[in-house]
Length: 137
Image 1 (cartoon, rainbow, N blue to C red):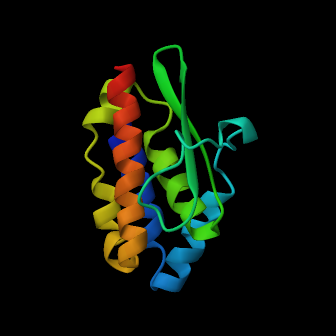
Image 2: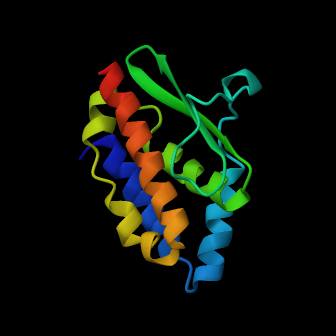
């Protein structure tokens, strides 16, 4: 099992503790507190995630053989969503990130509980993170 899948399995287990979506949203907001903060000078047009309802900036950084992400958003739930993605994908080899099947998002029911605009933003964040991974692989 890849280390990305191990993280996803842990997240699925965490979300199984919550019975309703208000509690799950609260848990997603908790991820916003763990997001590695992007520096102000990296909040550029190039690092802005296109297709998000809110402003989301995402920046990659290679450390050794592993790719890490920093981010920020002007909306707390969106910052939580990008924080969840960072928890899953950050700190792994670019090849692993590029090929990752993000099944945890379906298993926790995230996509069907987001507004269409937020769901588009989620897809855009994933696309951007995988594009960074492919570019550095």
